[in-house]
Length: 108
Length: 118
Image (cartoon, rainbow over all chains, first blue to last red):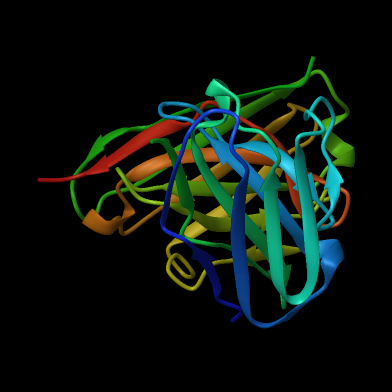
């Protein structure tokens, strides 16, 4: 089973700053099968990025995804107040879906 | 508008059973693969089960295999999760989620809380 590790666990930043979130897989993941989600308290997750780098419908262009193989990155170019949330990466392989443990982006 | 509405959650004793439902609307349900994903209180997301659009292919997480059964009724636009032999560690909010493209969850319900406790 592929295990996803996200770092850092918590990222404390100010609005307007750049956020760089990492997702590392225990073995190679097809880029087609790597996605990122945002979750705010009391809400369901929201799809941000699919196929490692494609933005989902309605997602602002300040969100971007990159990476391949075992290392993937979610970048938020300039944090808006509504971006403070928990972010999860997710992959599919061998008839299994797995999520990373999440990175919390909070206000510094 | 795509909508997924879960129901059936509640308080159940260890060893008990519960059946969750997910009512889908706003899209052609029979054309989409579906999943159940859960989230224990204060914890991260955990995938539970997958079902293909026809229901012919099903996958389970190891943590629920042999205890949970996923099914769907395309005529009723509904997804189900039969949960047996429930344990305290099954306590979580359970979400149904639609598969987009290859293996991405593009729409999620609001979730239903299952609490396993004596």
